[in-house]
Amino acid sequence: MAAHLSSGRVNLTALREAGRRELREFLDKCAGSKAIVWDEYLTGPFGLIAQYSLLKEHEVEKMFTLKPGRLPPADVKNIIFFVRPKLELMDIITDNVLREDRGRSPQRDFHILFVPRRSLLCEQWLKEQGVLGSFIHREQYSLDLIPFDGDLLSMESESAFKECYLESDQTSLYHAAKGLMTLQALYGTIPQIFGKGDCARHVANMMIRMKREFPGSQNSIFPVFDTLLLLDRNVDLLTPLATQLTYEGLIDEIYGIQNTYVKLPPEKFAPKKQGEGGKDLPTEPKKLQLNSAEELYAEIRDKNFNAVGSVLSKKAKIISAAFEERHHAKTVGEIKQFVSQLPHMQAARSSLANHTSIAELIKDITTSEDFFDNLTVEQEFMSGIDTDKVNNYIEDCIAQKHPLIKILRLVCLQSVCNSGLKQKVLDHYKREIIQTYGYEHLLTLNNLEKAGLLKPQTGGRNNYPTIRKTLRLWMDDVNEQNPNDISYVYSGYAPLSVRLAQLLARPGWRSIEEVLKMLPGPHFEERQQLPTGLQKKRQHGENRVTLVFFLGGVTYAEIAALRFLSQMEDGGTEYIIATTKLINGTTWIKSLMEKLEPAPF
Image (cartoon, rainbow, N blue to C red; front, side):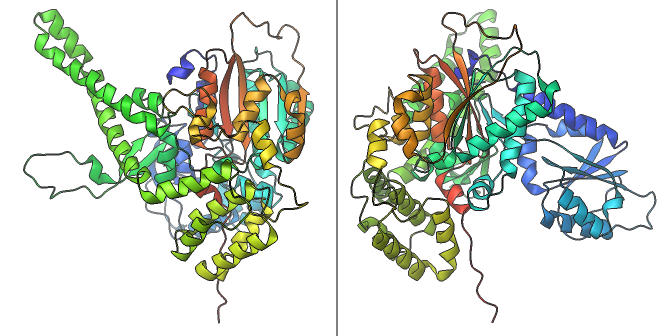
């Protein structure tokens, strides 16, 4: 586990264990040999809870991906579908079941496991297709909060932001509330709840209602968390649009991290052999797992990328010195000592080689002219320069047909940093985008407006400068090597969301009432009664533990900023992070994009 958690009192393994237990119980209900048919989206999150070995212990012999047609042959007693409750998946399952050869013997039993909730709508649909009766067990597996790391939980609900803000669908908020109830059952009631935003208000209300409706859920576990902070993503629309500048943030921006794994271009990782002239370069992408179990990654993941190089070169010197030791090992004892350390040293050497290659890949991009120009414009907007007129760089990018998502991120960033754009500026951008990229993107522009990302300025007032100054969102003298403020994660811009968490811890939100009113949605505080004898008496020097839950997604740069606050000597607060989804500007905008299909004539 990461160094910054070794001192912490929160151990998320209990959550993973509870998930495994629930899975075992279900698998044992389906006696005999099994094949699992996976909804592809679930395989990544499930891999973080249960390894294949656990499934094997419970007689899972085959695994297939859910797709239309006949199921592949498998000599098993049970076929279990692991699926999200989505109607389009029910159609595929119906097709699978109807094509099953009823004449075969012995017959195979069908079961269905809905993740994270059973759905009456889906079951009704299966009934109408005449296949509901084919399923012996129909159950749900409440995979709400998945532990991604020692201090990080995610629901991996890809459409949560869109559902909440565009479709007024609160399903993901219900799952968030359920996940928080599960967490409290394992880690004790959280005495204080703070929140900002409409979705935060909803989740808090649902939690309070669930607690009232299940009085038995009042447990006698000593609370691990002191505070829960619920934050709506739309309270801070700015942060995910900016390019993250931490090591982990840049890996995600450039290559995309999925369920802790990243796929990288293979050529940088080919073993260099003499005299072969690179004739067998690997073609498969290199897949690496990234989490704090890897010592070096835990150390560099949250640093500003400009501070990573010096750490890697120091490590290289230490490792080569350690390998040199073998020449000095004379006695049997010394040789034994060296051999015993060898596996650790070899692991450290290969970890260093991997991260040196990744850093080189990233550096090729961050030193490019285009990256620099893009970043310059972002930083001008965030520091309040020229946010109210059409930007030349954006116009040039549109003229050169740069990727549409890049354009949308910049235009939305400008809009957010100006509390909306003047109507003629907005119309100009929209016209240019439609003319260059096609009218089918009208729906996307409409979605961005509905979500508050790209909108006309109402009331003619730009509140962003007041918010920026009061919350100190822009720092001119940022220290990237030895940071003293969270603004290092964006080289100058302090994430608004994390600043709110920092100010809540001290001096408290009363100091920023005026600014809170300028941000969307209500802010509130709730207290949950603890049974007598469970009230906390804090030992001197003991940190408070705050769970920050981002409703609508969180970026790796924000996570880095919260970890930085956890590590501050005089901080006094340790942060655990939960979210509906890990996002970056690209995946976030993508989730809001829609294409108008051309007319079929």
